[in-house]
Amino acid sequence: MQRAAVAWRQQGRRIGLVPTMGYLHDGHISLVREARKRVGPDGAVVLSLYVNPTQFGPTEDLSRYPRDLPRDFRLCREAGVDVVFLPSDAVMYPGRDQGAYSTYVVEERLSQGMEGVSRPTHFRGVTTVVAKLFNCVLPEVAIFGAKDWQQAAVIRRMTQDLNFPLKIVVSPTRRDTDGVALSSRNKYLNEDERRQATVLIESIRACREAVARRKMPAAQLRELVQQAVALRSSARLDYVEFFHPETLEVATSVARGHQMALAVFVGKTRLIDNGRL
Ligand code: AMP
Image 1: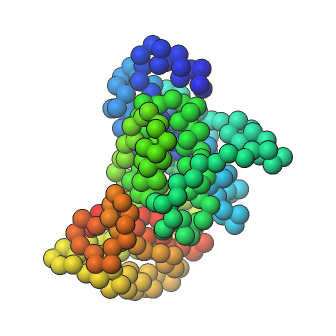
Image 2: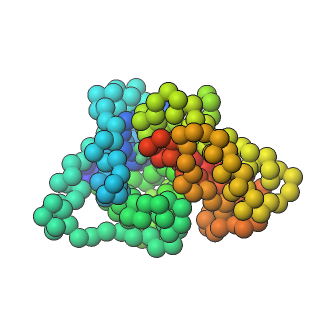
Image 3: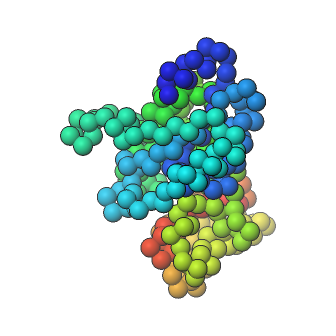
């Protein structure tokens, strides 16, 4: 991968990277389209496909994360991806099984709240693998989804802090017709759970409406979300936060322009979503 990337750079081909864990959907494909737009018809669009073990907690869904490589390859071909980068664990974490692998990248501020509370080792895995992907693929531009808002903020920060010579682009969340954000994990939901999954977008819409005219205390909005979630028999609220969209600074008084993010268990499946109020 590095040899190819160096050769492309020598030829003046721009490189765009779309990091994914596979089981692709239209959200991923929209990132591919954005990458193509950024690097031009002669550029190289690389989609990395790697279910990164270090970003999963010990009780999470690493072993049963959905996979369908033939389908992913077909979607990549149709979307005009030039290269699918499919690294092995041995390439990404040499010697990890023997305890030899020992270098990680840690962002210490933006990764602390929200997902960082519920999944304490998650962002360490994300920043580490993304830094490694940057070094393997040498992109001029890397595309991330707004669906994972905090992740995008953490990666932007890491890119600045570690002087990675590339541009981070964040592309809007793609949704199903009922408003549910597309996600590989939606595959885990049964029919009834899939219906109840609309509670995330409905909560965002309700909060957006609530702050449309006047500021609201975060506690009051939180209650509104708790009530909405309580109405769904299979849903359980993990967290909901209101914050500044760039600094992620928590807001106690919430107004238009703030960002909100939430995580909800629907059955055993943990879903996240976010939106601008
Ligand atoms: P994943 O394969 O879930 O790790 O996601 C890979 C990339 O796709 C991340 O940058 C995600 O933010 C992005 N992504 C996931 N779901 C969506 C979606 N519904 N719309 C846009 N981007 C998404």
